[in-house]
Length: 392
Image (cartoon, rainbow, N blue to C red):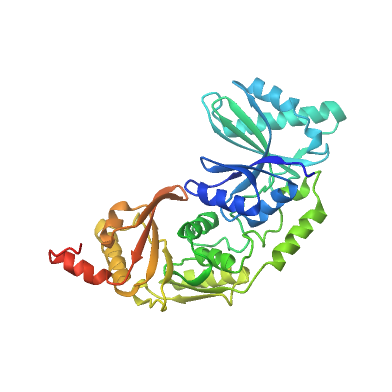
């Protein structure tokens, strides 16, 4: 029988429920939601699968020890009690990352340094040879999380954050994070078929994530390397089978994925990213202002990440959001339109009642994610209400 590991998948605020569903669909056991994380159990194969498949996870951690520490000496002593030779060779390389919310410890880099010292001292005392630090491609990535005086030591099976899918160029303008984009799509309940639009597509992240969903391509299929591949107990054959199965399950898209942006430079970058993702034949993009966009027949899902107005006068951003709402009412009948914005005042200028408002973050910005059903008769209803004859 395969050994079951306790694991934790980290995510962004507001995406915990989506991630829990993804994990359940992959066969994870004891799935439980936490703040910005979901804990679960599974075997080694599931650990590999989660890294490859999960669209809304940032990291998959395997906790190895929890303890209480009120100062740096206690932290050092407890870290040193772990048998690090299980996970790392004395001539191997490592990196330590720390996150903390604590009155006992106030400097994450110092905690990382004390952790490294404890591990290095253990190896030096036991073997005379010490492992080195490698910030770029370490053999073992160690995660320290401190909440008050509770310390959790985990092995990071992902190493580099899972939002780095491998399709996006670094010269992208104010991009939406890939994990946020995938979460936004999954929150709509879109089934990967029919019309999907992003008329303010920027560098194309939402379109690409939709394309991956439509073709059943795992989120991290393009990734060159995961942390677990350099672990001492790595099973190359298991990993090879999981990747082969993933390739075999890719299908033809049944979606019509369309994007546009007013900036020609953004469309150029979007096309490059779409090509890198191998989705040239599945996504159509064009250089258009939002008011020039003509949606296809048959309704569908629209997701927009409009400007939030940090660099614009209030009257300009208000006028922009009002025009956006007018366009939605006029041309997007039969569509479900989702808009993310941190500018709640401007969102009121859209002039439609949101069916849903969800709390999400775009980077460090706290946002609301609004859903609008543009159903048949929206315009007529608005006219009647304006005339003082609200429909019952």
